[in-house]
Amino acid sequence: MRIRQDWQLYLFLLPATIYFFIFAYLPMYGIQVAFRDYSPGRGITGSPWVGLEHFQRFFTSNQFGTVLLNSLELSLYSLLVCFPLPIIFALMITQMQNMKVRKTIQTITYAPHFISIVVVVGMLNIFLSPRSGIVNTIVTALGGEAHNFMGDGGWFKHLYVISDVWQSLGWSSIIYVAALSSVSPELYEAADLDGASRFQKVLHIDLPSVIPTAVILLIMNCGRIMSQGAEKAYLMQNAQTASSQELIATYVYKMGLINNQYSYSTAIGLFNSLINIVLLVIVNTISKRLTENSLW
Image (tube, rainbow, N blue to C red; front, top):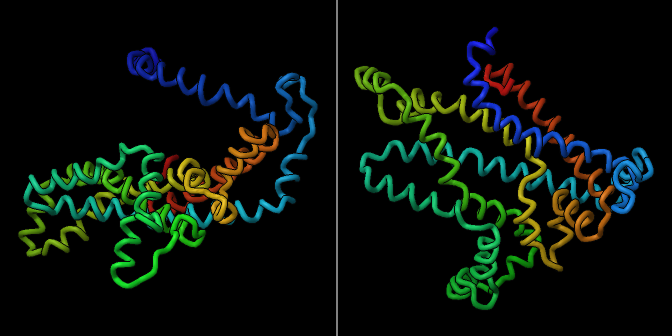
């Protein structure tokens, strides 16, 4: 009965439903490749069933501990740095009184989002070149020694996160700026009557206004925490640092598309997805109990 009354709204949902059914749910049929010794000539159903053989191979391989630890370290490091900074940036932007300066800063910080990851990694290689890079030029001018940052595995995570902050800070802050723009002016007027300072307004009005949005985004980020940065990490890898930069996502790419081990790579990818699902459920449950904000 309710569907008949609001059939126009359900009609609007139909294209998105069809899209996700075709491109998100139908491909799940291929998950069984992880449990078969897949051969393109035999097809999925014609390939022999091997059960958990590929999972056991991954768990007992020398790469398991390395790629799992690298993925966790990079994902947590990126989350701890990249998640709160857009909130802080949005709070700072909304406090600016000069609209021209505010719009200029927003435009400058939004622009890097539209730069290709390939270009970003190329910029890193140019700026950090030990011979002609601007960073090493400044270091040597100050009396230091030139350093091959891109060839030093210890710098990989720092360079990854710093470049990620530069590229995503402005764009990620848009949703928080939108949330702050919807705050009722009456709250600020009441705060002025009570003699609240600007910092107190931010602490007691602005910050609580963005917390629900921040919690939802945090839950969603935790749901893909193990799948971040495959493209950039792969492009930043080189022969000197490949072992310290190997992630689950890049390992899946190499095993599946380069070495043609389709079943093995599918099993690793499925394991990675299961970790993301478990983290999503755990974080969502904790958020629901502590803040009453959750995805479901």
